Image 1 (cartoon, rainbow over the protein chains, first blue to last red):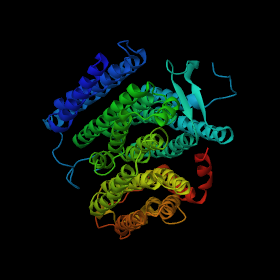
Image 2 (cartoon, rainbow over the protein chains, first blue to last red):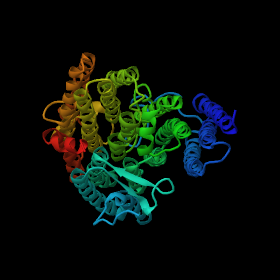
Image 3 (cartoon, rainbow over the protein chains, first blue to last red):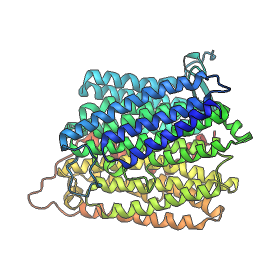
Length: 109
Length: 484
């Protein structure tokens, strides 16, 4: 097995792990970390499959750099919102069930 | 280097909203709103110029800054992209005029609306013009971040929770998409659509089939296709009305556009009839489930949000009707699907605008307490009804043309079961629209004040609803552009 393929398989595993965390763990920090692990997995697949015969391909590396910037921005927004939710509700979990009609205090109420 | 042209609106469609969004952030909501409206008017002019150019000269590409792929970024425009750019501009301008009045009446969250709306429009335009899979990913994320910011801008608990739920869903969707892109790059060594399409067609790698599954799943989640719609009603129903209008009319169309483009072009050698039937089945589920839930809502904006869930279903009927069938049927299906995207954009923006107007008038979001609306704000109620005509698919609206074309495709390809779904969906849409209209005609209950609504709000919503009707009467123009 080439090194690139090894990294790609590892990335696939990380993606699955992160995905499981994002979906299954109720705590918001766990979800945010899960998203980051998932993203890293996708980046690793991109870089790993991109390398040919052990030589790194610069294009996916540049794409991963861009992807990291996007992931940082998304993580920052998620953390800011999670903190705000903690201040407002005292909880780091999303409301367990969907809003039932008439019981929420939304922007238009 | 690109050949110097007289005037190329392509990069300006992205730069202009970025510029006014940044300026609106610095200037604050008052002057920011005026700037945004001026910017969107210019945007509409640019989109019209571009549509004219594409109609006359066909599809073309533009290398940003003269660099060209793979180091630089290529933009690409064809008929479908030009049509989507036009849709964005046509819908966003009235919403901006509406939002200016709305946030005067209800300032909550209004200070962040203008910069975020500008970033949203820039991200949409960049997505429609993207020529490679990775730029599509970046623009998808930009769009998601701007949309989440708008959702959460009101800052209360429900808004923040809805924003966060939306953010996690949209990140999950684009994560799946990115893994698909990585697999395609690994298999075929490119992310450019023009390079990849022939490579996939010549020798589809097994990884490309997995990439197809990941891209479809990610986009289904981002478009809120049943049963992945869980994030949409709280986000669209809870946000301020101008935000709901932008999200429902435009944002979900972006991921649909991406899926449509890749399905018809890049993944065309890979897609199977059974996968298309599955998407259609989920679309049918969306139509029935979304309409049924719209019917039982007690809050006006949640009703409109569930109606979006239902209308998304029609978009996905395109896939079974366009896959593995005769060329005539496929063409009608694509035309019908795109027509549905356009008419839903206009009608749903109008409907959220009207809903916001009614909420401003009666001061609360409760369908049972809409009495007196018909007497005090008849134009807003008329707007709601007119938008409802398009959603129900009654002639001569754009919704009718869309459903007619889909119907033709279904009959042409012998798939009568989708016709049944469409007819039932139309009846259910009529039921939930009349549920609102019925409550609006009795006089106000004693003690309930019905306020006047700013005229700019009423007329901008009305213009959107009329646009939905005009699309049915003058649908030949957009379809000619689509054929480019």
